[in-house]
Structure formats: C-alpha cells, structure tokens
Image (tube, rainbow, N blue to C red; front, side, top):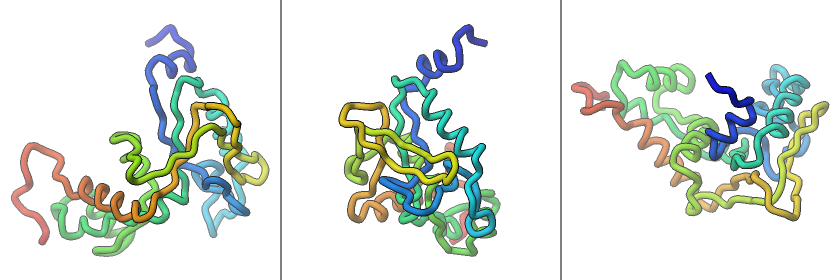
Length: 191
C-alpha cells in the first residue's frame, strides 16, 4: 500500500517507459492497433474508448518519466522466432506458440519482442535513431496518430530503425528466444 497518488507513485518508481504503439512520424490514413484498437481487416475502425484511454495515459504521465515510442514501423521490419523450431526444447510453450501461429521455422514481425528488448536493455544508438523534443498525438475520432515537434525539450521520443538494424535486432531477439531459462541447458533439444 502507498499513501502516494497514482501519478506520485509513478513519478517515484518509474524512470522510463517504452511504449509499443503508434506509427511515426505519422500514421497516414490508418489508425494503429495499440493506440486505438480495431484489427485490420476484421474491425477496421478505431475504438474511441481505446483512443481516449491512450490520450489520457499520455497526458497524465508525470513529465519526469522518459517515454520512448516503438511504433508499428519499427517491429514490422524485424522478423524473429522461426529459429525456435530448432533451438528450443520440444516442450517449450513459446516454441509451440510460434509453430501454432506461424508454422515450423517461420518468423513473425517483432513488435512486442523489440519493444521489450529496448525496455530491458535500453535503446542502442547503433540500431536506432531517436527523435526528441515533441509529443505523440492521437485523434480520438479517426485514430490517426503522429508526432508534433515542440521546439523545446520534452520527456517523449520515438524510435526509427537505422539501416540494417532490423538484422541486428532480429539476431538479438532470436538469441534471447533460444536462451534456456535456467541454470543449465535441457537434456533434449530439437536439432
């Protein structure tokens, strides 16, 4: 329990947040799923409640928290996971999930894994360009999003891939997916 308000607790405990969402510097004519819901092609229109919730969260975050956006355009060009067919134990639920979703040996875009990688290991300047001094915006009606330059320092930034960074980041994610989570390797690996 804490006597601090939600915003005070966040300011006291959170240094940075890596947010998977948006499409930067602009989403063009399509909304992005993580900011405004919907699911192309089934539900192609944005969900206003999701849009409003995203805007509320971004507006209410304490400015002491460094917010880094890893948008659709980042993870869409990094494919990982297919290697788990051969590097992970047969009883691995992660291996089986990839096989069930993609098929044996097939990769998938890596929106989630790359965002988690940036959150845990930090943002490598070798792999990303980072645009600072602005704010993400989301239109509550259309769900379109983008970046508004502020001309002054802000707590927000968004990532763009450097040339060939998709290959470097894919290798990093695949290495983590193939790492055995324990003190020693399992007795039986699929080869």
